[in-house]
Image (tube, rainbow, N blue to C red; front, side, top):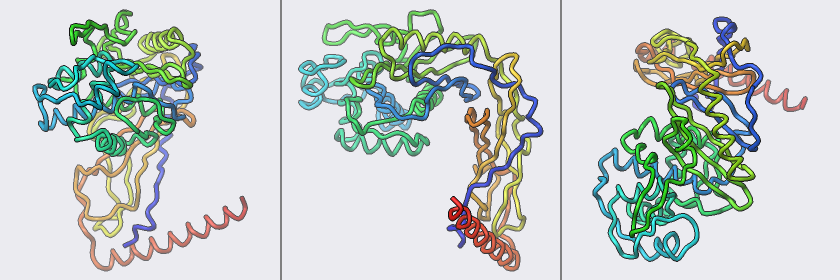
Length: 397
């Protein structure tokens, strides 16, 4: 009834966490204009540089292509043994007659998804990307619709995809931060398919090619992802590495050379593994906050995290953290225990470094007619007050 009055509440829980160590002055040098370093276990952003600005992804758009193919495989819509035919469009646009990376898929041949996936993630094959797009969705255009819809579902708000290969298009864009989160999604959700990124070489049509990822041979624990290049946007890379059970995802973009790209990625990974340690923000199933409920038998509901919420913090640093609980509210009764109703966000200064979901710790049923009327009157009055203050501030500005 009062959905037009919904807004975001920010609850500051600073007192309990003010003494937690956080990052000191960054002792790492990065020359690429865009960079992100993400800890996968705690989902902590350890480093970022112009991470929210959008860039043309180039070949890195194939990460979303892979994510959709993996989603179909996991949902049993296809199998690794399903075959797709190489169309004239796929062969001409992405195959032997074209420029760019390719697996040399033969025209009109039928190729198993497993081989196409290998050609996609090991060789950055444009022909593999188009064949997979056409095979799973009927056409490139339909596949692109799925790419953008999936990006919205995953919360990749910066992403706009125009093709499954990453061929240059001024309107195709994504931020380095969202590239990091997309990569983390692939690693977490599809470990049985992520392993293909680590294959060292692949032979197709009697042509042997090595993995395009320059991080793999560097003894960093690297086992995936992809490289990219855009004519006016420089060189880019998304990589992931694991050491001692800890996994990091690195993104660099806009590098002036292949050497700068790999040096920055290697430097960030090495620094991340050596300089950080885990810190507990709060334990799983602990009540984090109470958020307001409209029309319920109770006026609020406790929210909890299902798991421990941890942060990776630089050793020896003493910076303060701000921990906020965010939700669109007031929540509408009834609310069922276990429903996701809010998020916790952790900031260093203005930098968002961690976000995790929060769930209702209890059921809240629909309240009496009187309590619902009271809540309605309260929200109506609050909405009028908010509107008046909004107009006042807009006039002053």
